[in-house]
Image (cartoon, rainbow, N blue to C red; front, side, top):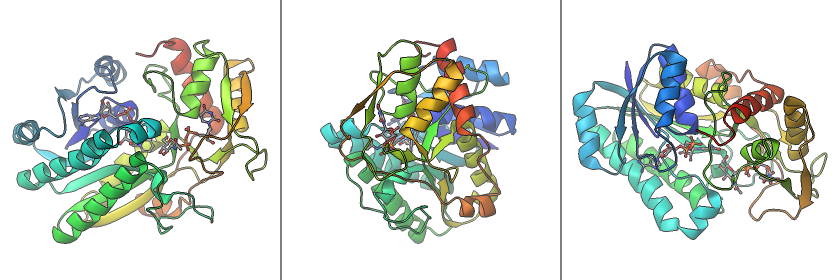
Amino acid sequence: MKVLVTGGMGYIGSHTCVQMIEEGIEPVIVDNLCNSKEAVLTRIHELTGVTPVFYQGDIRDRELLARIFNEHRIGSVIHFAGLKAVGESVEKPLEYYDNNVHGTLVLVDAMKTAGVTSLVFSSSATVYGDPDIMPITESTATGQVTNPYGRSKFMVEECLRDIQLAIPEFSITLLRYFNPVGAHPSGKMGEDPQGIPNNLMPFIAQVAVGRREYLSVFGDDYPTPDGTGVRDYIHVMDLADGHIAALKSVGETAGLHIFNLGTGQGSSVLEMVGAFSEACGYEIAFQICPRRAGDIAECWADTQKANELLGWKARFTVSEMAQDTWRWQSNNPQGY
Ligand code: NAD
Ligand code: UD1
């Protein structure tokens, strides 16, 4: 089966392409390279022996999408393409809504025209906002988002819900990722943020290779066991496998399917620093700093629904996430 992978050159998309190829699924990638590099294709080839078909272009380009659907018998679409930096989204809401919301609508319209009815969408635990009760289940309320990035994910979810109601033959799967981290165990592929990393793990990794002096820990006065923020970190390889499990289990079943993809375990910032220090063999320098605006104290997933209905369970530990990130970062200190 051929699957169109939008944003397939990015962090999560590239790892998913590798796992798809291992499973005999043929990815066809469309990516405008606004946050990724063409070198990713070579790495996918090194890992799998296959170079996926790659279209460099934008998902908002209707003609390009029509051409891709014309040139390939696409069975499903996995839609990763989007902008994802929370701070930037506050400065540039227009860009975020245009790329993430409008881009998705153009894509779904092209799918409809081409008669492709299976879509898996990259959503985020950010759609849950700051819920009172942990763990977060798929029926926890959504929409209390605090920034344009989060709102764009929530808006896309709501659009897709309406579209699926109007076109009932559509199979639409919303995968709400918790905190993706880690890298391919080979050390050949991983996260390569441009500029100063916004997220914890890539920042720690850059401190470890000497690109940054120390980690700023955003707050140690949260109501958590050690006072630092707690998140559900999930290995990107587990996340990649979650997409394949979703394609296989519900990808051909009409309806709206919603799953949390997490491990079900929370870890604090200081626990992540500890795991990374162990992986790289020396202490990661950090300083306690004020809280970051918009951050929540803690967040982790109830994963029962994905475990039961997708037959999928995250396998990797925090220690493995740190070891694989370290292998990637130390082999590629400047990224790709
Ligand atoms: P990424 O930036 O590494 O990958 C996204 C890819 O999409 C990039 O290669 C980029 O060049 C491409 N892209 C962006 N806009 C495009 C457009 N208009 N047309 C074509 N290509 C375009 O991000 P990622 O971490 O791999 O995230 C993938 C998806 O998962 C995103 O939608 C993101 O919002 C979502 N998500 C990510 C996280 C996370 O922590 N990484 C968490 C929750 C959800
Ligand atoms: C952030 C986004 C979220 C997005 C997710 C994608 C915010 C407010 N939220 O989530 O919308 O879906 O990334 O992965 O930006 N931390 C530090 N120092 C750092 C970086 C982070 O202490 O330099 C702490 C944070 O305060 C938090 C934890 O590490 O407690 C994880 O942060 P991060 O990796 O940015 O993820 P989230 O905030 O969960």
